[in-house]
Length: 255
Picture 1 (cartoon, rainbow, N blue to C red):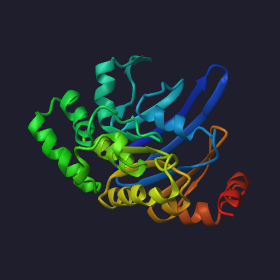
Picture 2: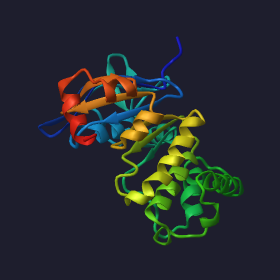
Picture 3: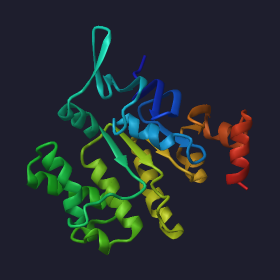
Picture 4: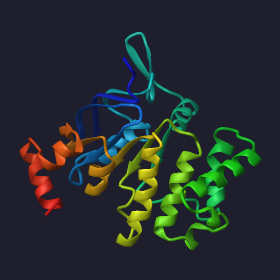
């Protein structure tokens, strides 16, 4: 059996008395692009943040490869990892947010190389060289000296993707990466993501871009009200959904 890249087992997450995730169970195989669809408030972004322990789960298990995320087991008890151990795990799971979260006082290249230099202690000369290669990969080698305020939203998001890739993650998480962009800038970000998928990068993508999910996704998971309602191939879920809740959602977004 080939070990999945991501395993979620009965994952629960509450904020106070509000249960946001109600037992999410799914797997993502190495090299797959898994797209998470669903209405706002369905728990998609929260689930993504749980994968790299930005949010702590209340129950269940999350594994990336052979590592339990955020906790270690001792006998019958689970103990939360120390911050340095959590940081090491996060370095293996790159994340791209809705808002670009770039350092405004650092250039594009400085944003990309900060993680490898600070977190992974990569020599600066090597980090700078690899950072330039990543900026070239996302089509921004000529913008390496530019600050975020000098870049369009699409360019900032591509810098954010390069920054996440700089830590050489096993798994990439995208939390609605095009939702903050003007419509004419969406394509340039989706093109980079499509190229990443073609290179074999394992990706979990929260998105409302149905075309991307259909063309690039290997599997689509539809979530609503904190639950996984339906999973399957893009063709099955998007064109012939079984569940009434999925049908109702798609009738609105594909109208």
